[in-house]
Image (cartoon, rainbow, N blue to C red; front, side, top):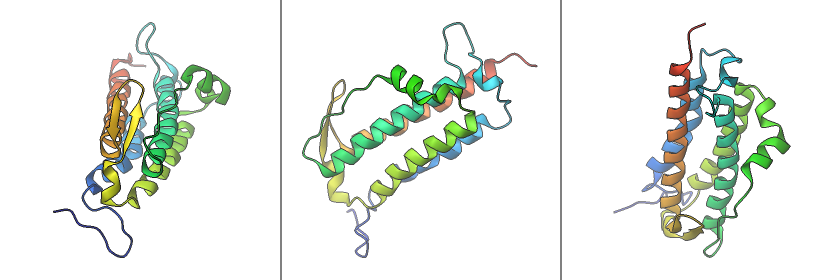
Length: 167
């Protein structure tokens, strides 16, 4: 049986999901550690994304998915609003930033979502939202999908770093 902290109403049943999301920025930092800024701008292959481009994607994704998670927590069956990621990355100038700057922005986005989820009662984790490609999903399912997506891109950055020729 799930439990709720009766002082704050914070979730206890879904704390694992909250902790997994909270760990993402440190995992990203570890993946970037020890790599020169110029290496983070090099794509591992023709047409591949450089680690900086992956970070720009993660920032855009964390921003919009965090907003969707917020809307699921507070609205009746919200729909994920689609966005033009390439235009956003260009408009915000994210590919011109250093890896550490992008990481700080990603951390802030994720920390905002973690703060929300840390105060979301267990009973709200079943609330649904509509994903244009993924269909109807609960808050819990969306958070798990969010974490998986971020983890997949951490693995992509790690693979790109391993594929870089030695300097």
